[in-house]
Amino acid sequence: MAAQYLAAAGISFLDKKDDDSHTNAGFNTDNGCLETHPLSNNGDLLSLNFRDFSLEWTSNDGKISFNLDGATHEDVLKWLKETSKNQLNKEYHYDLHYDMPYKMEGAAVFRKDDESELADLTHLRILAEHSLEHIVEHYKLHTSIRVWPHHFDTGIYTGLNDSEITIGLGLAIPDTLSHDHYLYISGYKDGKLIETSSFNKLSKGEWKNDGFKGAILPVGDLKEEEWNIFFKEAIEQFKKS
Image 1 (cartoon, rainbow, N blue to C red):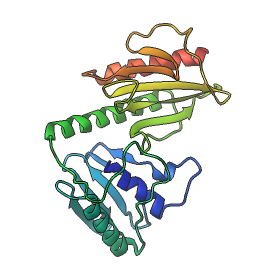
Image 2: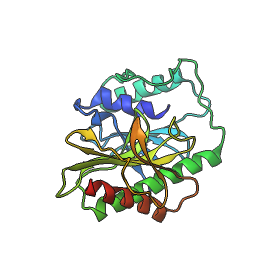
Image 3: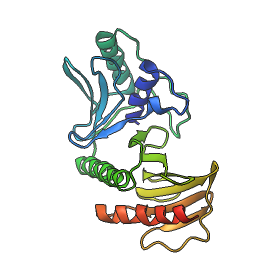
């Protein structure tokens, strides 16, 4: 839920993009932070630090931190409004234009319950960045890796070179497709999802063709190389479709 504060910062301070990309974030593998796009010419960024369970406002002038553990939604909004006013002389609005499966009440309290779980989530995001960086480099793709607030997936969406195929792939959080974090990939041609019922079986993961059309693979304790193999096998089949 805390990642939505970053999306709201993008909505508050950045020019609106038709694809909502002003609301997405990047993951910094060096410091374990989810970061907004730059919010000013002074390098202002709002970040969610996975390791410290805190929000951070950084700029060329330094860093200000806010510990989320024990804070209410109202506390966070008060800090964000004060900080953005001081740093940008602009007003922060928590006004999401998309539906979420839950609603944050003002008195809701953040708790840092399990540090090992936070460490595991950080590790997964780092693996996702490294694996997707490998795919981008391997296929010479012209895209950036971003975390999208609507579903909190780390992913890329781009056309394949010398092909009519567009692919979307990445790491997704547990939902109706999987009880665990999972890798996903879908292909598109002429603006439509590509049917996968006739595709060859993958060495890991499985093809889906009912509702979601593509392949998924629960991450479990998979190594990065296994992530890469899954994505590459699927991409090669999409290229032949």
